[in-house]
Image (spheres, rainbow, N blue to C red):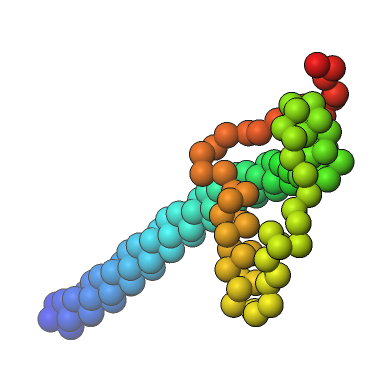
Length: 137
């Protein structure tokens, strides 16, 4: 009888060992899964904060671009250029027909647009402010 009970006891011990190992494995798996979930949620939150920061910077840049476009439009308007000509006594006049170059091909138009964009864009982070109030000499 002792032999049979020992076999049964060994079998019970093996069963408990297997259940214990399976439980430890499941707890380990659940722990790793939980840590991974927390990590990825933190990464998602950090990316959201970074995205909001970039969106606010983009909004500020768009506002600056809009303001500078308006200032350039005012500064380059024909009325303002005439006023500056008179104010600084530059003695400039409109070009003659001989001085005007007509753009005819598409490649020339692209080149002119590229040069125009290159000349207008500021190379340094400098803000240009144009005073539109008239000064008397």
